[in-house]
Length: 90
Figure 1 (cartoon, rainbow, N blue to C red):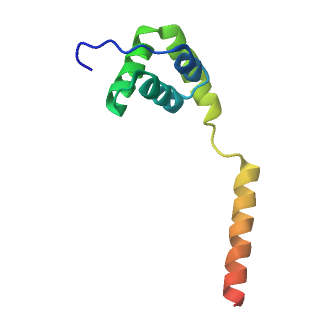
Figure 2 (tube, rainbow, N blue to C red; figure 1 turned 90 degrees about the horizontal axis):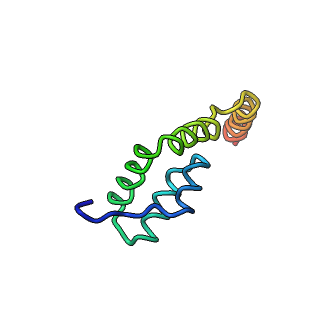
């Protein structure tokens, strides 16, 4: 990042609070016109220096990235089994 201070905008902070680091990096990259590495470093630095936002990010990130539900897994297995059966019938 060098000597340049990269500002983390309110929309980027809102994305972090929603658990979406990718969006925060993208917003920072676009609004500050910096490289991907610089934006990622700036967002990471922001999270380190703002523990309240970091804690909210971690909590929301955990909630939005839950493992797939059992019903969804069973549905996908049945779909795959049906596709395999159809393929073998040809």
